[in-house]
Image 1 (cartoon, rainbow, N blue to C red):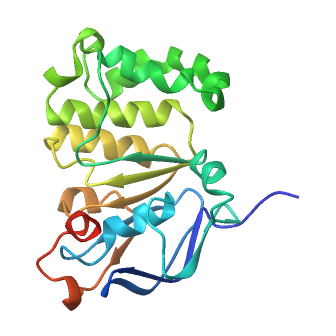
Image 2 (tube, one colour; image 1 turned 45 degrees about the vertical axis):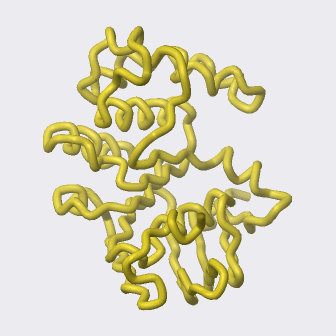
Image 3 (cartoon, helix red, strand yellow; image 1 turned 60 degrees about the horizontal axis):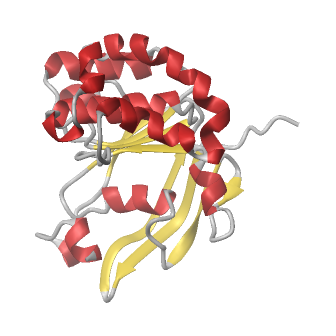
Length: 226
């Protein structure tokens, strides 16, 4: 029987860092192929939601399901095979850009996808990246080049769900449009993103506005987690 469960389902999620309430009773359902953007003031828990979906933050209460499977300690690695994440400041590791792109395909879970690297030239062109960038050392790349390279890497891994955390923040208008157009034209990818850019909001099917949290006003989520 075909699995028709939502791509992501979050029920009554609550996250605490010590005595601080970061998220309280948050619900969200994202259909397969849907493009949903979470927006809201700093400290409202947007990035923490993404961390919970990836199993990098443990909720105090509530549940998360990925493609119909409840996320827990036993299933977190299985769930991550359905997810790709691109952050505001991607960590591509060391070496050249080509090595960074090819590195994930050396892992056992991704070895069967190695032929996807044949799509690399077309994706570079799609995101306005020159082929010569592959031979550059990662530290020499600009912030926008790193963001687009991280996105290309995520696409090549054929994950059905992509999580974006301000992943277009370093891009100019043309490159934001190229990223938005790609997802708009690729119906089989589900996208859940954190964004503030007005132009990026236009690409979405739905915008989820997260309310300000008075318990954490003035603190960003990474600071609270640390």
